[in-house]
Length: 100
Image 1 (cartoon, rainbow, N blue to C red):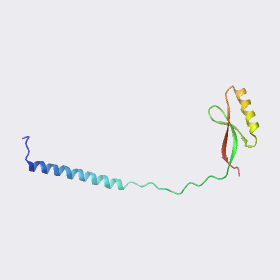
Image 2: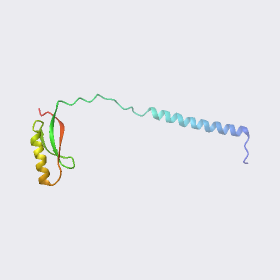
Image 3: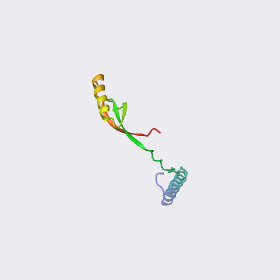
Image 4: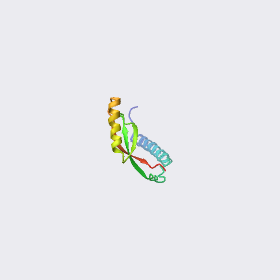
Protein backbone atom coordinates (compact mmCIF):
# COMPACT_ATOMS: atom_id res chain seq x y z
CA UNK A 1 0.00 0.00 0.00
CA UNK A 2 2.94 2.34 0.57
CA UNK A 3 4.20 1.91 -2.98
CA UNK A 4 2.98 4.15 -5.79
CA UNK A 5 3.51 3.76 -9.47
CA UNK A 6 5.36 6.41 -11.41
CA UNK A 7 2.13 7.37 -13.13
CA UNK A 8 0.45 8.00 -9.74
CA UNK A 9 3.40 10.05 -8.47
CA UNK A 10 3.50 12.16 -11.61
CA UNK A 11 -0.25 12.84 -11.51
CA UNK A 12 -0.03 13.80 -7.82
CA UNK A 13 2.84 16.21 -8.53
CA UNK A 14 0.85 17.76 -11.39
CA UNK A 15 -2.18 18.26 -9.12
CA UNK A 16 -0.02 19.92 -6.45
CA UNK A 17 1.64 22.17 -9.05
CA UNK A 18 -1.76 23.19 -10.42
CA UNK A 19 -3.04 23.97 -6.91
CA UNK A 20 -0.04 26.19 -6.12
CA UNK A 21 -0.43 27.92 -9.49
CA UNK A 22 -4.08 28.72 -8.67
CA UNK A 23 -3.02 30.13 -5.29
CA UNK A 24 -0.42 32.34 -6.97
CA UNK A 25 -3.01 33.60 -9.47
CA UNK A 26 -5.38 34.51 -6.63
CA UNK A 27 -2.63 36.40 -4.83
CA UNK A 28 -1.79 38.31 -8.01
CA UNK A 29 -5.41 39.28 -8.51
CA UNK A 30 -5.82 40.56 -4.94
CA UNK A 31 -2.51 42.41 -5.06
CA UNK A 32 -3.65 44.46 -8.04
CA UNK A 33 -6.86 45.48 -6.31
CA UNK A 34 -5.08 47.37 -3.51
CA UNK A 35 -5.44 51.14 -3.91
CA UNK A 36 -2.30 52.98 -4.83
CA UNK A 37 -1.12 55.83 -2.65
CA UNK A 38 -1.91 59.23 -4.11
CA UNK A 39 0.88 61.74 -4.32
CA UNK A 40 -1.39 64.75 -3.93
CA UNK A 41 -0.41 68.36 -4.26
CA UNK A 42 2.90 69.50 -2.81
CA UNK A 43 2.68 71.22 0.54
CA UNK A 44 2.35 74.98 0.39
CA UNK A 45 5.48 76.76 1.58
CA UNK A 46 5.05 78.44 4.95
CA UNK A 47 4.55 82.17 4.88
CA UNK A 48 7.11 84.65 6.04
CA UNK A 49 8.80 83.69 9.29
CA UNK A 50 10.52 85.75 11.96
CA UNK A 51 12.96 84.77 14.68
CA UNK A 52 12.17 85.35 18.35
CA UNK A 53 14.02 84.49 21.53
CA UNK A 54 12.20 81.82 23.56
CA UNK A 55 12.88 81.44 27.27
CA UNK A 56 12.47 77.72 27.99
CA UNK A 57 12.14 75.61 31.12
CA UNK A 58 14.09 72.41 31.72
CA UNK A 59 11.51 70.29 29.87
CA UNK A 60 11.75 72.51 26.78
CA UNK A 61 8.40 74.26 27.16
CA UNK A 62 8.39 77.92 26.21
CA UNK A 63 7.82 80.21 29.20
CA UNK A 64 8.07 83.58 27.45
CA UNK A 65 9.12 84.99 24.07
CA UNK A 66 10.98 88.17 23.19
CA UNK A 67 11.49 89.90 19.83
CA UNK A 68 14.86 89.16 18.24
CA UNK A 69 16.45 92.59 18.96
CA UNK A 70 15.70 92.19 22.72
CA UNK A 71 18.23 89.45 23.42
CA UNK A 72 19.58 91.20 26.53
CA UNK A 73 16.10 91.33 28.08
CA UNK A 74 15.60 87.64 27.27
CA UNK A 75 18.90 86.72 28.90
CA UNK A 76 17.96 88.75 32.00
CA UNK A 77 14.64 86.84 32.16
CA UNK A 78 16.52 83.52 31.96
CA UNK A 79 18.76 84.57 34.86
CA UNK A 80 15.76 85.79 36.91
CA UNK A 81 13.73 82.61 36.37
CA UNK A 82 16.71 80.36 37.10
CA UNK A 83 17.29 82.17 40.39
CA UNK A 84 13.61 82.42 41.34
CA UNK A 85 12.50 78.89 40.41
CA UNK A 86 15.74 77.15 41.44
CA UNK A 87 15.60 75.31 38.11
CA UNK A 88 17.75 75.98 35.08
CA UNK A 89 16.14 77.84 32.20
CA UNK A 90 17.70 78.41 28.79
CA UNK A 91 17.35 80.61 25.76
CA UNK A 92 16.78 79.46 22.19
CA UNK A 93 16.00 81.13 18.90
CA UNK A 94 12.73 80.00 17.27
CA UNK A 95 11.09 80.70 13.94
CA UNK A 96 7.47 81.77 14.16
CA UNK A 97 5.08 83.09 11.50
CA UNK A 98 4.52 86.82 11.23
CA UNK A 99 1.42 88.18 12.99
CA UNK A 100 -0.53 89.77 10.14
